[in-house]
Image 1 (tube, helix red, strand yellow):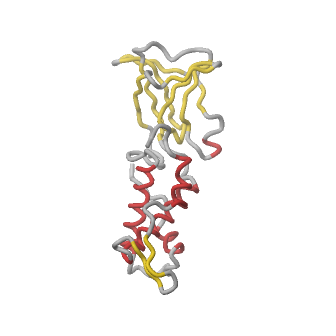
Image 2 (cartoon, one colour):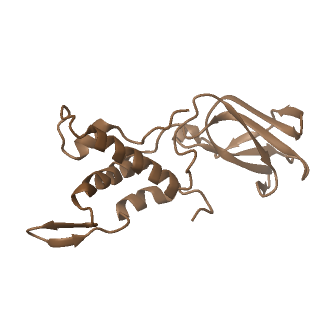
Image 3 (cartoon, rainbow, N blue to C red):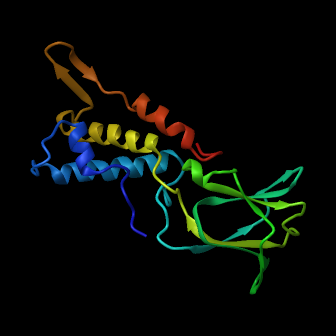
Length: 202
């Protein structure tokens, strides 16, 4: 799976009012996009998986302890974000013995249609097993598409990082405003990414 950035070089050039055919700063632009994207991953609690979608289904195994939410209609098990149900396979078991299940529902309802990932599997009128049971989920993990908020946050932060070469000490100056110290955290970036932070992170 190739790690992707959340905005393109062309989009960043437009954001910075750089001519599309000006290639003299492409290396710096690419570096800023990569740093901004991976910074967003870390800030949202996704340092290893980000918002991209796996190229193919992969299997992940989960212990039930700490992952079960009891609901009136049945037990809900929380899983990593699933961005595509193509090839989705859910099994229970332990060791080398696994049994496929079909009587479950994905949650939240309409998640993929709304451009958001599946985050739970609901066992209708039943439980997922005992304390020793594990579940194995084969799916394309990730997000069905990069959220617009994340793409915009990437552009803002990448622009900020690109311009840092002109403010190596964290300050910028102008004839109108004098010396201005840059804030450590851009509030617009933070407001855009905060709703996507994984529960319990930071």
